[in-house]
Length: 219
Image 1: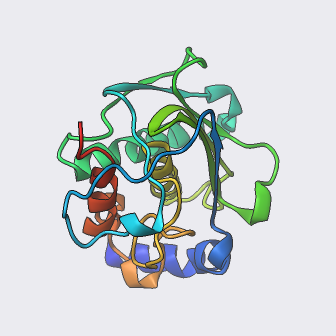
Image 2: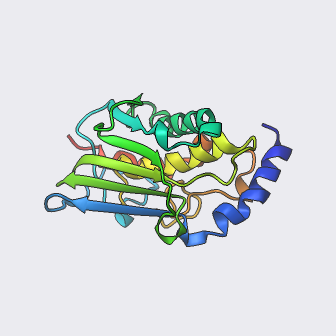
């Protein structure tokens, strides 16, 4: 995609993603047992591990169910492409150490589920993730996405991928948000004209990666 195309995408998306400001993402969690502190200090820097709770899955790959019935029929394939891309970005960013998944479209009982919400999300969020855990161990995660404002444009798949990647950061164990606007796990992601021309995987920063790896650095 050309820089000119990205310039249009981000100027058009500025209202959609930056103007929502601090209302970009709502992360919710339900504790099934008492919570535990962060799982040790791996020493990787920079990170924002001190600003968030960290949880982890027992093992990977993990099953991820995508509710195709929630997707608009006329754009279903593009949504599926964007979701699949966003789901896989953390595994790419961590060189396969964290976040490998198996997507399915027929097992809603899977540990992680992703669907498009037909109702507005709280606080005008463009995505929301509810996780359940026992102690430090994740039990389930439900990701809800809003309909992209880029339906019918060339930017739909990338927009969905970037939003999905943020919510998967929560689903994989980063409970709260980064305090740094440059990070994928900032409350409204890290969209903006300063990132024009960047592919979604480049928007996952070393600070994002180090923070997620902090959750999995101890046996």
